[in-house]
Image (cartoon, rainbow, N blue to C red; front, side, top):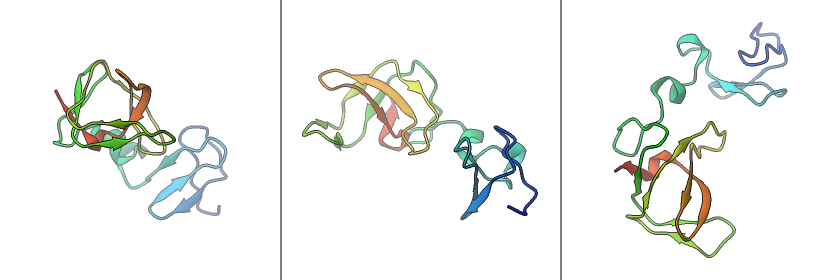
Length: 116
């Protein structure tokens, strides 16, 4: 806490370091002060699919491998096409919000999809 850094989101002085990231306990914002403008590396580069193609809201993607749905016996099969994705900021790495036919609304990690 004696670092002199403040949270770029809420301007709190109560931040702490965890590895290479700094974390604000008040708003749960994480950032790397070494990147330009205080943005995290993922935000600066944008959300990209497994092949490195940039994704945006409304895109259609294809799941590249079978994914188990947590808390359920359902599986999203590889090759499933998902239309109309929405990009979200999530601390757990799930940065795509979507609705999959037969399963419903869920979040996906961009590393398991490719742009259709």
